[in-house]
Image (cartoon, rainbow over all chains, first blue to last red; front, side, top):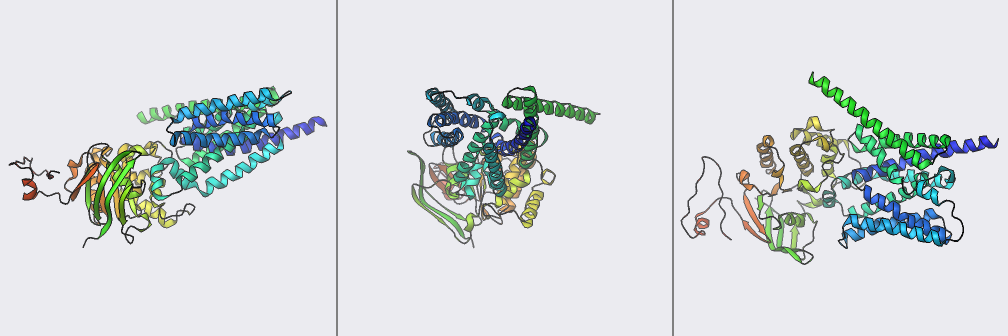
Length: 277
Length: 248
């Protein structure tokens, strides 16, 4: 009896988690991959660890701390690179390590045992709560609405910011809103894949999608599909094999990427040969 | 009669403490075709950016013809290096983005907008590439797409920044012929390094090197020849059009 309840919870959490993680990571991932913001996103992710540490220390929800840290570091990088003329990649490096250092210090200072620390670093589905899943669900709806309503505006700013500035005075506003939503997406997905691995959850699916298509909307749709397959399969494998969830999901996604790349390579060379004949 | 579209009155632009344009004055009329020439870093691109409102002058005044240039109706072809040309966006979507200045940020493209885009795509000889991503196009094809984006809104003033750099040889004559036709409907200001190849279409010149010198005509008058202060000889090869600018 107890086993079946546990199984039911496993299926519901796993399925919903996979759906929402793949939607949020697909939308946000396509944006950061096409806009070449992967390094910035990695920086935001690691900086958020500072918020997790402070959250533990102060006894507030670590996810809230992480959200505040990630948004502030995203805006901080923008401020340092644009206003203070510090190289953007250097600014990212500073925030990246500063966040990790802050997190480690505060977790060290927190009295008693901190059992969930590893789950924040590497992700663990066992510690994912229904509240986390609901938060990811709300984020999915928010991102779908945002990208749905402002699709062209976001697409055009990503493609050619200078030209967008000739017709809209709101380019910076859009950039700040989008970056903040990205930061929140990353933080919520940390519960699935962990600080160290979450960046792959965002970057691998769009790269799988780009093997097959070269238009933005199709990349988003295929990313969500690839993300769902990788996340759900990785989750199931991790459960039955008893290995860490985040790592298994990333491992599965990379396997899909390599397979897709190989298949398209063979397909293209066959096509070339038949064209040559 | 030609109508004045915009007037710059002793406009100065500085980036931090570095003055890029100083006391630049210029009038642009509705049938102008102005070649903007000058050394790199001389302020040619900045001149276009002031007109577009992308940079604010520290001094001087910009007067726009509110009736003809309402709604920011200026077409702009930036230098190719400013956009990410491997971005996964289709030819059709890039050209449609030229209509964004009339659209609110959340309004959809209408059937008419899409028909207009198809028409522009056809005129540019890109019909077969309409659904292709920019990443699949050559430099010359991308340049045509960006020209389409600049003109789809039927602007009264078209600003071109170094359009010749990526135009492939096959399309070059065609490209400039297109500009000549467009010039019947709109004023054109074109920044170029190699202005030589198209002087036949350019009606006047603006030399920009921090300061702006305007040469109202591309024809050489006796008075302008006298400015050389010595007898000069022009050597031409057959029918190649020729322009000599007076000293400044």
